[in-house]
Length: 349
Image (cartoon, helix red, strand yellow):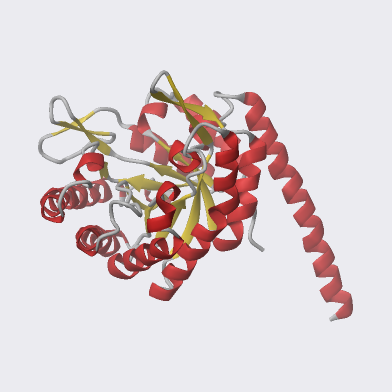
């Protein structure tokens, strides 16, 4: 039986960089209450655009990197203690969002270097943690770059992305034998030209060409790009139609590669434009439950972007308790179904 609950959350380093070990304990204890089994740290290093300086969140041995905070050690320590697995994000760059709009040749030159950097980073993280007590908490790796149905519609651009991601995936498998995750997104505002069928083709090509283990598709319900405008009826339509995108994702992936799993990356926020700027609010538990129920039939697991940032108890205790009650009620109902099923098999089979 597939559980209709969120099993984990993305975490961006800046949201937890100042946590004490006591705060890690407090948060991870609450995550266990919700049934979480994983955390995805979105990145382990980043480049400061103004200075070009690279920072890492662990004690690195890589030349020209500066350790900003030993966040990975504390995260893996908490993961080990509470038996919640951690997917370690590799490197990221804000330049991605402008580079993907350039020509395939320009994108190839840039992304080749990024893949090289990610490979160096992966090897260094693995050499740092693979032989100590925190190894057991490492679930795998996360590639932070997000392909989409608009910028990667052309065969040339798509092939460049696949070529360099395959190198990262292959290295991750060779060094750690652990699964690797990526989280692409679709933009339904351009559905007429780049709809579910073409999206399914993109998922097929990525799964087949990269050998990626897990594709966690962003459901896009929180983003304004899905709602077209700030009117909630538009967002409701996006929610109503999201199943066809996941159906296309599953069809494309399974046709390409049986070993690639499909997850849902549920957006637990609502983006609105205020005074010309994006502002992000916590989504209601009622809407999140709708997302879960619609998407669950197509996926093996549900993660979130980002329960930690929008529904965690230190952000909104009421939202946290509401979702906790949903999880508790859901488990109680399904435990009853489980035992009725067991009784049936004992006495009638």
